[in-house]
Image (cartoon, rainbow, N blue to C red; front, side, top):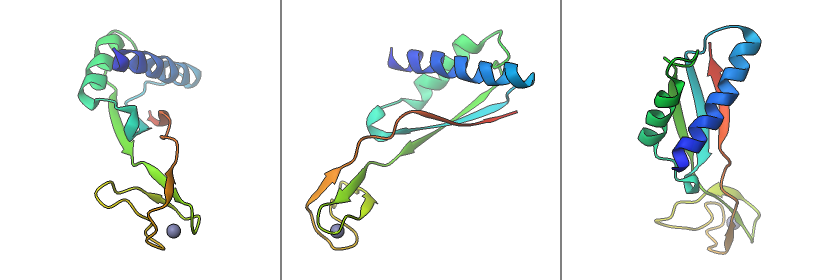
Length: 111
Ligand SMILES: [Zn+2]
């Protein structure tokens, strides 16, 4: 299960930070690209399951999904791609390339 792996990595990263500061984390914010296909519910469920009995037990996860970005080949504008009308918002060109999906990032931990 994809989410279980993500949850394990998150728990390790958050526990590390918490241990360094010697405080209990109460929340964490992560972000990832849309193509990463994280299921919020599955991730929270997996995290809860493995965090039981650790300092991260009561931690609340917040997941932000970043839109896919494109870069216009005509005017070089970088923009969020709207797949219902995929074109450059600046020059209306439909000739653009999709940028790589945003990676999964641990944005911040609340203590
Ligand atoms: Zn353009």
